[in-house]
Length: 114
Image (cartoon, rainbow, N blue to C red; front, side):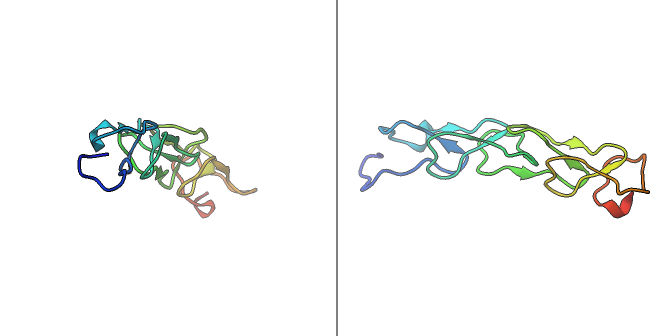
């Protein structure tokens, strides 16, 4: 606790610590790229599929933009959607174009673009 504090203060969003004797917020550890930490976290959490973060000290992950996807946890970027498929915002996988449609373009965001 900080000197004079009436109660323990949690680590701020984007940082974490499992220690109990911290005296300053600077003693908290920043979350690594591909991970986030909410206020009061004792550990960092990997970004879920369909999201990413490419910076240290993030309190949340960013959903993949339309036309991109991420099929693994804890990543620092999203991948371009593949030809013959589309990817909505926050996609964890590229979805194939509907039967009878196709596109050689990448980064499609909706089935109607096939």
